[in-house]
Length: 540
Image 1 (cartoon, rainbow, N blue to C red):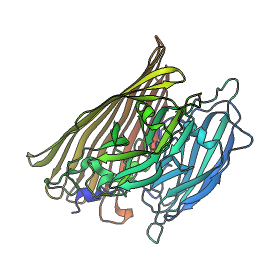
Image 2 (cartoon, helix red, strand yellow):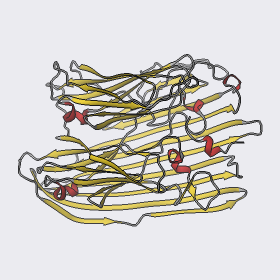
Image 3 (cartoon, rainbow, N blue to C red):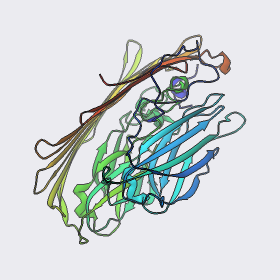
Image 4 (cartoon, rainbow, N blue to C red):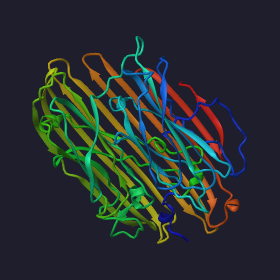
């Protein structure tokens, strides 16, 4: 029998068209076709103004050749804009693995995605993303670059036909211009140093606020795609890592640790040994990979001198020389109204020790690795901004707790229960009332795989992507946001036989609930054997 960890190697957040609530009679097992992929996440809310749409990508991806073109802002919708929305339409037919996609405009990564696996008869899907924050970049012509690396041959026949559109909504009396950064910059001279990404950024001298974002993904089908199941090298497991499964995405500014974060445990549509589990409902974030954001404002006074400064993004815990992490990084710059240099400095910089304990034991015939890890950072800096002297303090605490168990050298059964927490608080205090932003993120992955003596493989999995966020501006003024995105599913098929004899079955449910400033969105979609059996929307 093949080791399960080898089978683990991969064979969203999509905003599909809103479907009415209904119940369909599902087939007894998967056939040659199934319903198009979709998710329960909400579509992007659109302003009421008349928009202009520009197609920026139109490509049948069938190899590893990037698509390139030039984007020109629509003449009929000059800025300022109230909102900018990206939409990707995809279609594929035949046989194909899941693939990772990456879109850049002006050298800035604005969208990262993965693709569904197709049916013989073909599927189509749509992903929407609010890209208003990139409006400063989109105000002038820019080169476009997109790649969805793909292999097409006699066996893998699926060509990924993809179009990407940008839709611009002008501001008017009812739809205010969006508040965005002054500039959005890619890293200059990006280079790899081991598993880390290193680049330079040169900031305007009047920079008064600074935020970085990193589209961090473990991917590529190797052990780092499933980093959360790796085990210490002294443990008998086929995906070893020197320090076990703890991973932390860390950003440095000129050699100083400036931000820490937990990576999201992405599961793509071939993941956990079972593509049948994801054919209709992908895992959270699979189609719309969200970046990690770091507030670097405490460092403004040290880096806004008009000279290049180094930004380094690394993933703690990755074994030396192991590939698999992709880390596209952008920087958002807010400039002061004055053209003079914004003066500032660092007030405190406290970096706690990284804790990472992975303990191995043989418990009732199960190999078991228990991991506890975490890190804490607190940094404070001042800047003489257009609003006076402002002190920004960023405090972050991250942690990971997991139990990974398997039986025998065949690693069958193989199961994981893991939780990641990522807490941050940013306080900006000046002459008026302070602004306090809190975020509590929690990611849960609970999965089990086993193969019977008859070679029947079953995957059972639950994922939860949740966040509680609150921003307080002065007395009584606050913004509240609560997100819960829960996927549950089970799928089984017979290994080592032609597809027609696999007798594949699966059922899954996604429940997405978002409350924001009193408004509520709640939607549940369920599917069985490729047919949607429930699509219910409404808050209760």
